Image (cartoon, rainbow over all chains, first blue to last red; front, side, top):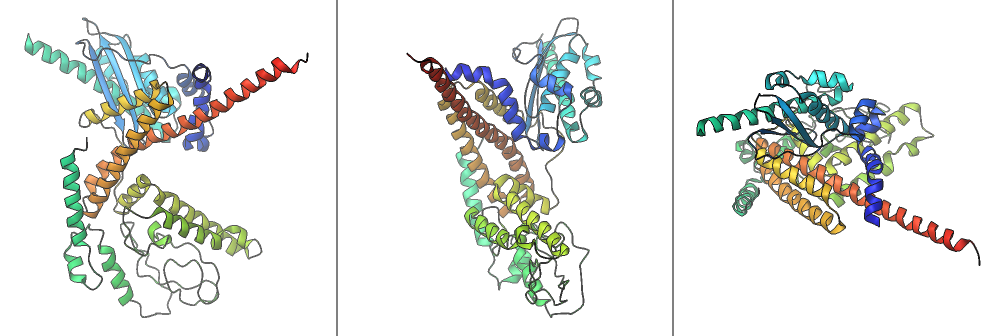
Amino acid sequence: MAGSVAKKCLNPLSLLTRRLSAPEFITQCCYHQKVVDHYENPRNVGSLDKNSKKVGTGLVGAPACGDVMKLQVEVDDQGKIVDARFKTFGCGSAIASSSLATEWVKGKTLDEALEIKNTDIAKELSLPPVKLHCSMLAEDAIRAALADYRLKQHDDQQEA
Amino acid sequence: MFHTNCLLRVSSLLRAARCLMPKRHAAPKTVTCSHRCMSTFHKKDTRHRDANFGGADYRTDKVFSSRSYSTSEAKLNCWNCKQLLDRTPSFFCDSCKAIQPPEEGASYFKILDWLVDYTFTLDTHKLQKRYLQLQRTLHPDNFSQKSVKEQEYSESQSALVSKAYKTLLKPLSRGLYMLELEGMHLKEGTDSVAESHFLMELMEINEALEEAQTPEEVNKIGQDTKGKLADLTELIDAALHEGKLDIAKELLTEMKYYANIEEKLESSQTLHVFLLDVVISESVTDLVVDYGSGP
């Protein structure tokens, strides 16, 4: 019973404890509504099959704050990103940045996705200066995922 | 990640490092030690004593660099009675007992009166004792009847001592502070390809924690994380002893990631206790509702 209660209460309460344990929250007063939205209703959380040749996996970390972010993209034969998933362990801004990143890359070609800049993400989420590195992390995650995909394709071509 | 042969290397490093620890009279040996060696703290201390010929002039060494981990040889005078302050940093004047302002740039180790070398491994009980001792004398509550100036000094001193204590209490913040004293900071950017195995491992631990259903599973992850943090503490201590700051920096970066996991574990355990309270109180409420309506 405790388990089901835990599952029911976990979402808002974990937000509460996370907020309580995040000093930056206390100093900032509140996250922007868009960040809260992505945090409470994250889009595209999950994993894709990292062994698939169509999937590129980007795994990045931010040493200064200890955040870890995984972003995966699935690319079709025409070179268009058809699916994207993320898993981020870190602050609300990092989660929101990666959630937004997965929304933005869907439907783009590899080159178009490479054009996504951290400044665009930061602007969209109204990130304060102290959280700009979170958007940087998301941009790096996109690039890492695309680089991984390209590497797999290159290896594939070499084998063929 | 930390194989047995790595730890064996560490213990031999530790033995070697301990041989390097100079005795106070062996100043030349200290000097030939690597310039980054922590034991040069003794060298600066000796110089400090030699320079102490009690000049009456107010001298401040504004050239104090953040790289120095002992205070400079500057001598300060009491703002109240103008007598020379005996030690640095001084909280109170020895002559008139007036509270002094915090000394700019004094290291946290000096503030908490760490009379031994400033090292990564320290006795946190002693640290806490010293902290409480200081706060008993410096706390603003003791200065409510004093002048505005003294009240201000008391507030700044008390806050500084508090900050110093919090920084030195935990290994991670302590290590990062020691690097900072040497002008090093954790890199701002992102890690990706180079540490991909490590990041993958971290991802797995975080995912396991997220998916854990029982307290036993959470505890298991907690034990593993504590183990990893203990290993890292040992390795960081060895690296700092040897003056290998780049290695210490990398290890402290790893520690940062594990410390985040530990924080999550602690808050999930707090949440678990909180939810148990909720469940218990809900059950009690149900009982009252069921049995409250009389026969």
